[in-house]
Image (cartoon, rainbow, N blue to C red; front, top):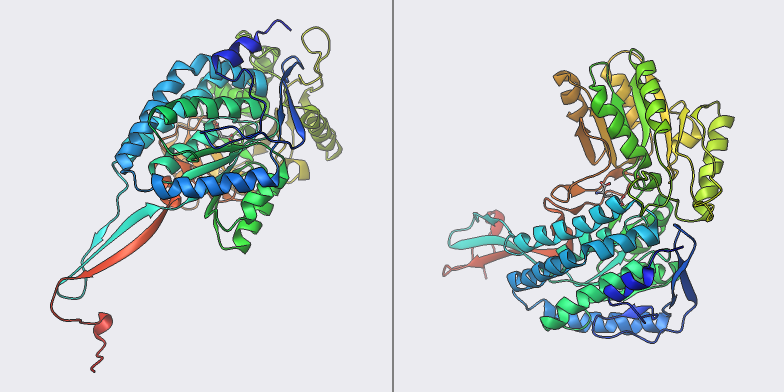
Length: 513
Ligand code: UN1
């Protein structure tokens, strides 16, 4: 195609880099299997990277540990200053990096730019946080004693990220980890190595200018075997992993077996409840963006609409009409709403899910299918589909990373809709569209949505970085990003100090010598 990817790569400073491991200070001459990154947009080769080997990994971890010993002594606000400069640098590269995200991953340019904006937002958040790593003080029960708690840097943090947010998720973790005094080793998805290299290069510029020790930001490109090394490595106290529930179960088990900490951000099966009082002019764009944005490949993508029977037909007709207006094609062309799926496996999973939905009794409302012809040569462009289904269908209970939206009808009160919404194994994001206060409050109450994210009159995707991001049940329980998500990146210590001349024991215990 005509897209000038060379120019973008050059602009991002990744002209010649084809090595798969870096400590920030230098790139290793890696000799592992070659990983070629093909653009799902036009099938062109973006670049080929030699993946890292176990020996590269070992060298990286040693460097990271060394870097940690120095980095943890930097005052947190000084670390914050480095992150502030990184945010500035990312602002400069926003268009180039957002374009590369769109080209390597396939999401629309708007969403590529939005993803880079999330990087900037989390960096800005982390700068303020660097002066707010607060612990509590307590009153001791013992006279002449003082108690408080403090948070110390934790160590080397392993980050395993997915293809769908190839840059933001890394920064959600690193911006917090770095101000907390940790060092990071990142294994990006093998499907998006080039955006990862771009992030590493941008970071390197800022880190070099600030004499940040080599090894504070490391990158390692490889397959699941590298992820396994990270998960099993006792030198890595925290592993943050984003991806499928299957991946999370194996990472979580490996980290758990050595009693490490894990932060898991796994699958979602996100629903919007639409009640009779909902404002349709918000429902339709909210639901459609949620279902087809990033071609249905966000963990927060809208997969189910739970619609009251009274307004079911009205919503259904409006949705079908809106789907008729969707433009599918090159995501760099801003006239298009929907880009390609990431690869052939994703297309096959999409087709299989549609088959299975039909086999289980689903009614196809908006037909799916793979597009062919001019502009669709990669075979990765698919039609967003709508299926009328039942919540208990096996396929509805399962997260398919594709633009398939299931419509489910409910009767009676909102509690019935909430039961359906909660009636899946995943628990990431949820939403209710209503203008009825009681319904909204019920949805948010202790008996309401069981998800980590519950929105009112907003769709399920598009979370802001200020709030803690993550979910319950098979979503893995981790929280990243805003609020007090930083605490998992630090170790907590309780300190009791005696400034009296005697040694009274807690609980009034007498012990005389
Ligand atoms: C993800 O899909 O992995 O809420 C993260 C959203 C984005 C982040 C999604 N801010 O859709």
